[in-house]
Length: 312
Image (cartoon, rainbow, N blue to C red):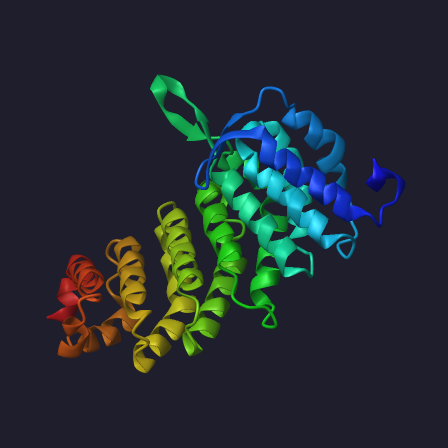
């Protein structure tokens, strides 16, 4: 009530939302969200009356901490929202990715990622994703533009929540990525070039490589001709990583090289890039690092499967 009368008293509303978070939850886990709520509290009614209006505020410089708390509310109670409600909320969460406040755009990325992992009861006692690729498709362009605007901003620290959201979005949208593959691959390659110079956030790096792997699998499994685009974009940073011997990254690089080669069209051979890369792969020091061995072994098997005649 005090906030309704005086918008400068946003702290009062922030306290009220946290109070509801404290008394409405009966059972919760960090991974799966709230599974049981206090039946005496109408969470959705409170959301509609007090939280939703805050998310509709378009000025990202206004009450950033209250925005963050409102997004936190959505994330925590993600299981209580229907698919239709989430699809209605998604444009608002995407808009908050554009906030200059790190806390706000981080909470927004985390909330979207967690929503995309939410599951509902399916047939035969199974659990199926609440949000499908078809549900996400209309939002893909704006979502990736907003996420990569954060990644591209070198004034910001590498944000693992943003990169995890990119990975999850790619995973959910796997059947609808052909329209955005070029720009997404270009952006991921650019991010890889930046982190290769100075690896400092292992989780961010992991989700970055996982994002590339998801993109390769989703696109090349539909049309193997796209392997040439991945080779064109990824070989330069991969070669840099191998030449600089970036120890944290070499297992990932070998794994992705194997993945692309496995999808290479039948009868296309190895191509110049893979042929020139093969001799260095036999360097004993590479095999002495245990972390390299599984991915290197997979890569050698891929070589033999796709171009044994080129190696003899």
